[in-house]
Image (tube, rainbow, N blue to C red; front, side):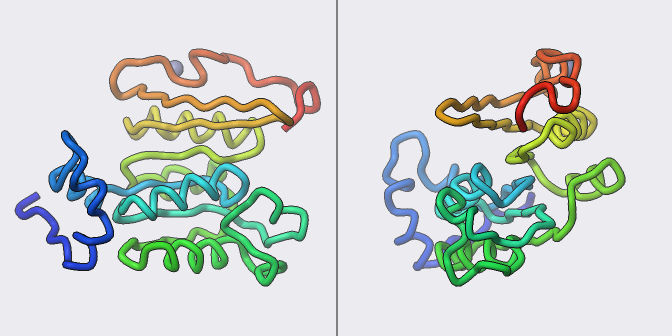
Length: 191
Ligand SMILES: [Zn+2]
């Protein structure tokens, strides 16, 4: 990296509270701008995650999701509103994120995250966010993060409970598969 990315006057105002934060400041804001995150899923977990990442000034956000917005999504999937019903979730997400912060580059991957495309999709990002709702994708995002040597942020919810973890296998820490070596049999636990 030769030069720090310049922040425009608009960005200096936008991120004023970050810049005033001791031990954060301009240096960390530049780092955020240079950073990229791939979020798997634009649903209940992907919505708040990508909205906060965009608001905070992460430079490049990728979203993988093959689905369209359903009326039953809107109660929790804040990226999407009533007028987005039947639209592609990726498109709806892009509109919302660009409305929050037009400085962020949003990259849409309108496909399912699967063993055939997972490495290629993830390769150009610094970090994975697993906002998926099923075990095969969860293990896949873990394995891709291990192979590429990048962190994987995992979240899941069930009814009134939730879990969130940051897995950092590139630092020698255990991965999701170390913690849960065997995926449950299909149908044994809820998605
Ligand atoms: Zn492991």
